[in-house]
Length: 253
Image 1 (cartoon, rainbow, N blue to C red):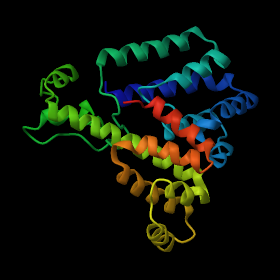
Image 2: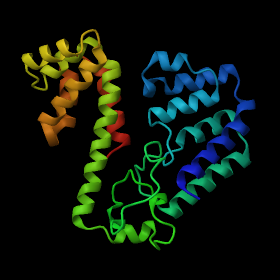
Image 3: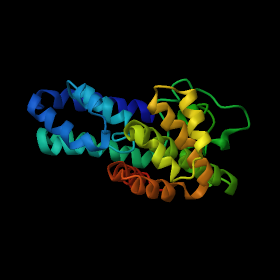
């Protein structure tokens, strides 16, 4: 059984068992618990049931196949059923045993079913599922990890860093608003670049901010994390800075 199937089954079982135990008041409390991590009042207000909550938690990478802490939180506080906690623990034990690479993106690899011949060892990209390997390949995650070359390990880290940048940019773009200009100026974005972005994406602050952050991060290269945190501090957006710090801590490389 592949990790995405196992995870999907766990979520379905969790919702089936938990839904009758989660009242409207409970749901509002859970939404409030994760409102800071989600950071979008519109998304939070749109959550009408437990299924919707789980989808939003997954979208913002708060809940994932390799991090089911929110499920434990909901179970411990509102469900309190031993059979459910057993299912959660069994899933985690199974996941550890399978030893899947972290950062496999199940949502981007639904159509990935095969790898090019003579390229089995290129699976160090954390977003490639072991399910992509031919059934008769004889390779498993343990063998792949042992056979990684220094070049492959470097590529793995680069992929993980790229994923982290995408998460940060997405979250900051959703929350920064008109402050993006001041913050990006502190990251040495030039005035002509700001003007170009405003002309290219008129009336779209989120897109302006998104593109500006990509430019700033690429300019700051290996120092992008510290540069962004300093810029948010100087731009008086400590609220967004705290969000970024939490993301960096949760996804520390």
